[in-house]
Image (cartoon, rainbow, N blue to C red; front, side, top):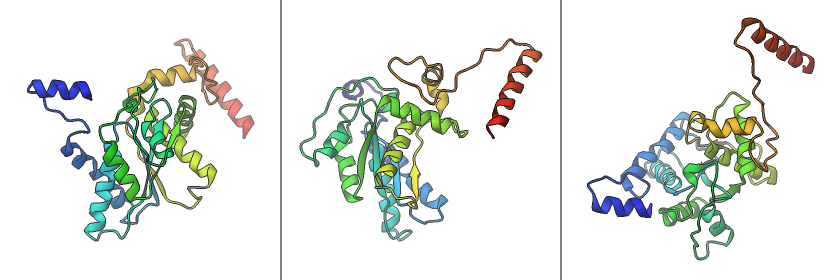
Length: 242
C-alpha cells in the first residue's frame, strides 16, 4: 500500500484500494444484502476475513446505516478473522487495544490478507469497539483444514474464507458463539483463484503440514473401462461405510 500510494501520487493512476472511501461505500452494500436476505432479521455475528481491514469497517457502515434508517433495531457483533502469519489486528486486540504495532507479514496461503500494516486499522478498531466485536486468528494448517472441510460439503472456497471458518469453529468450541446464534461467514473469493494450494494440500505436498482432510487425486487412464473401474470401487467403498 505504501508503494501504491507513492505511484498514484506521481502518475494519473486511480487508487481503488481500501484507502479509497468510495470502495468502502461499495463494500458496505454487502451488509445491506445480508439483512435483506434474512428478511431484515439481524444475525448475531458476522465474520469477515481481515487484511487491510477496509471490509470490517464497511460492514459496520452498512449495518449502522440500516439501523439509523430504522430498517433494523440493532447491529450484529462483528468478528474479524486473521491469518496467524499476518495478524497485527489480532495482536492489537489481545493487548487490550493498546498501542498498535505494525509487523512484517509472513507468507500465508490467504495471500490477499497477507498485510502487516493495514491502512484501515483505526476504522477497523472503531467498528469492532462499536459492535463489541472480537478478533481471532488461524494458523496455516488450520485455515487449510477448514478450507478442505468446507469443500467436502460441495463448496469451493478461498483460503481467506477458510480463515474465517476456522475462527468460527474456535469460538463455537470455546462457547463464545452459542449453538443457536445466527452467524454469517463472509466468503471473499472463489476457490478457483487458489487451485494450486488446494492441489498441494490434497496431494499431501505441503511441508510440515499433516493435511489431515486431504482427498488425494487418483490418476486414471483416459479409457472408459479404467474410469468405470475406479468409480465402481469408490462407490462400493462408500456403500460399505453406510
